[in-house]
Image 1 (cartoon, rainbow, N blue to C red):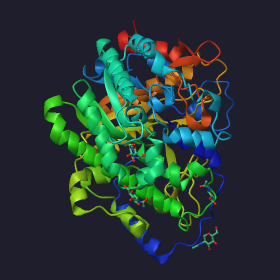
Image 2: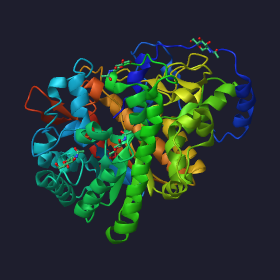
Image 3: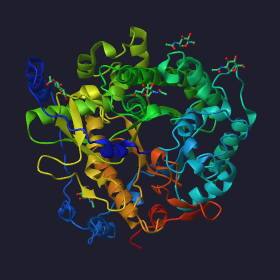
Image 4: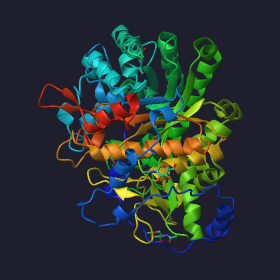
Length: 543
Ligand SMILES: *[C@@H]1O[C@H](CO)[C@@H](O)[C@H](O)[C@H]1NC(C)=O
Ligand SMILES: *[C@@H]1O[C@H](CO)[C@@H](O)[C@H](O)[C@H]1NC(C)=O
Ligand SMILES: *[C@@H]1O[C@H](CO)[C@@H](O)[C@H](O)[C@H]1NC(C)=O
Ligand SMILES: *[C@@H]1O[C@H](CO)[C@@H](O)[C@H](O)[C@H]1NC(C)=O
Ligand SMILES: *[C@@H]1O[C@H](CO)[C@@H](O)[C@H](O)[C@H]1NC(C)=O
């Protein structure tokens, strides 16, 4: 799920750059000296991406041409055990929210309370009825030729009030048993997210959900149930999806209460972002420890966590923007990666956030360090980073980073080309750079690209999504380039398998490789990108 860009429209607040404090003047050069960030551009022809140019030429033509050339990396040029898949999440496709014994989830509540803000609210309860049509959907996945499918389990469906005392829902347990078996029988490895945004509302109502450390115990109970029940067959687990997006959106942006107007430092909200992420990390680490000590040796799987990220590129060559770039990386990726690889938050975060940043105990640090077998990254686009000393409002980046992301740089140029059918700028180099950055900074961990894709928001015919072919192909190419340069990438999952409910945008983004026709009994129809992906995975494109 990609929510970051909803923000661009919110980027109406342009805080004026003012006098630097003495402290900052002192800090910036020293931070910049230790800068790890190196931009490694992939050369490509950006001639077609001049700003303001009408969409008469397709900015991605050069990719389509490249696709049929012998330099495009074939499926066979990737390792044979490389996972090529696609994904979805329980909340976004299952439907049957009130059926099969499922309890209410937090998103049932959020969407109900803000019907005016969320698109396609009428379609929210049924979604695309994957719960009922999973067998058909597995056949569609099989047709794509993927060897893996990223899915998530709904906590509310297997443990309706979130706790063991509240009981286990047999019907929910059976549903995922059937889905997992169906996938395996069709040669598709399930790649399972334990928590993808939604969790039982009862936990939030009773004690504040992930704002309360008590949830760690319940999350661990829930995960243990999954390992015990499905771990004989599931070999890829991820604990939590996009914890930083959830934390920033839920509190800095106050998504529950759709308002971005409050000053961060003076309210509880922005501090709550740090609390929320802290508990997410502790839930991740204790569950990972449980898996690794109790299940891994017998079951032979691996466990990781998933972050959402774009790369950052300096807004200008000014030292302060270069330092701001590193800070945004530390505040966004480092916020998670430093704890799970090194056992603590980045130094710069501890310094700038001060006592609003929760602290890990010695024991927790030990538990966190090395708590992941791999990293999942969800990549969509990248941004410039600009120094901003006086942020009074949060607009999608961490308020405390003294930096802000920007779509255009000092010269008014974007990163990559504008996709005229979507909302974003397409910048596969950002994926490459990020993979290389993670390789260098965190000792080359295993990485899966757990989401990558583009919307078809402004497309006349959602089935004619040639722009998505170009998008996916260019990112597969960037992935291969990163592997060739030593990054330990083990899989790629196109987002999304089917049209998914994308919160504020509802279904308007047409994210699916399979388009779902809401006027024709939720019929699933392969788009051109689905046909291309199938051909890529199952034939040689140059045949
Ligand atoms: C869940 O249900 C059990 C049994 O009714 C109850 O004891 C517990 O307090 C409930 N927990 C929550 C979080 O609602
Ligand atoms: C956290 O949850 C516990 C119950 O598990 C409760 O006693 C406590 O008051 C909660 N704390 C907050 C800050 O809500
Ligand atoms: C929503 O936010 C406003 C301030 O931004 C606050 O006064 C109000 O109580 C909040 N409402 C809810 C339901 O949280
Ligand atoms: C930051 O901006 C606010 C208004 O946007 C202003 O009142 C304040 O004085 C500024 N702070 C500094 C340090 O410049
Ligand atoms: C594909 O990747 C190579 C680097 O291996 C790069 O030189 C080339 O420009 C990329 N092509 C496209 C269309 O992105």
